Image (cartoon, rainbow, N blue to C red; front, side):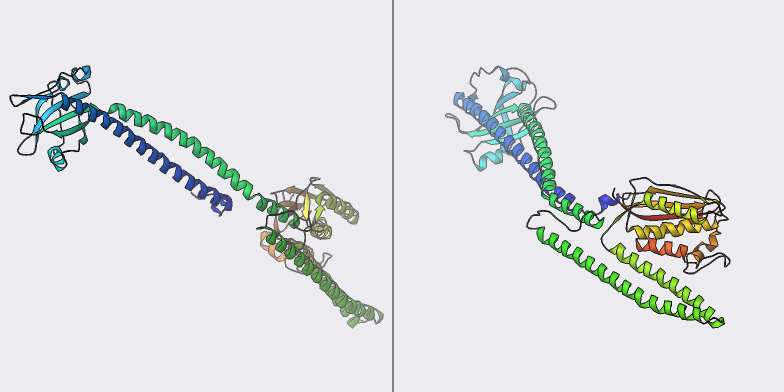
Length: 463
């Protein structure tokens, strides 16, 4: 499954937001885990300290009679109740390194108080240090934490191991509750950080968005240059853009000047040729006059195309589509009055062509003139927005139409499908080339009215 184009393109905003959010979330997760571990360690230390105090009480109250260890009379009711979760035992090491319980608490009942297999080894490695451990308790499914201490009692030559253990579920529950509360707090903090990061990036990059809008306004002809007070990092870019716009305008003006000079340079000799030929009648004069007229039309065509290309690359201008179509419809209905042509046109009042009025007159005029020339009496013209940057202009007629295999031929410069029809064969060629100069397109198809359909896609200016 492919991502939408807007998501697949690199985005500076998305990159900054994801980077900041990634680091923030990683830091929050690490901090939450560290806090949970610290809380668990602190809770275990308090738990072990309590067990150590109980073991010390057990040691201090124990006595030896006839070589046997006698436990003190403890008043802790939990140690007297079977499987209460608090257990103690007095034991001794065996020759094979195991622990043999001498006297257990009544809470152990008929079970046994388990100890780690290496408990004796760990106690012997440092007799002054107690050993804490976790192991299964006497009750099924119970986990206990025990603490054992190595001690020597007066009147007994063998060491004694004193053990106190307690169910660790309360401490585990406290740790779980702390972790849940910490997770909720850090989740809220993370959401706040993400929102703050998004706002920070949007505010920080706002000058870029403003610059983009101003460049778009220049391209659409709403402004002549980029204005505004930008941060020091963007000010050089704005100046370079203004310099580029100025250079582009100068280039367009030079092109227009060259085109005008070329027009004068070519039109004058052609006019002289036509004038001289008209003053000397004869077969040669007729040929010269006819070919000179063809040359004049070709020169006019190419000059129009060059001017349109120069204007399309320059600063944008806006032209009302409805006003142009209304003017063309009235003019062409008068031209084809003898034929009784009726032109039905429709265009929104807020639809604008991103280009000069003369070019839209050339594009729509040649297309509508072609339809009026070949129609039986009706021409339909419709203009409607397609996207935010383009609009569609459709010209249809009720004439004989055009076979699909001949549609490309009619777009070639000077091509005429009917030599008896008036014209130079440049009409649709001009429409196609001017549309391409504005990065648009022309498509020929069948009209529901029975004739030919011209579909033009042209750049749209904002209202």
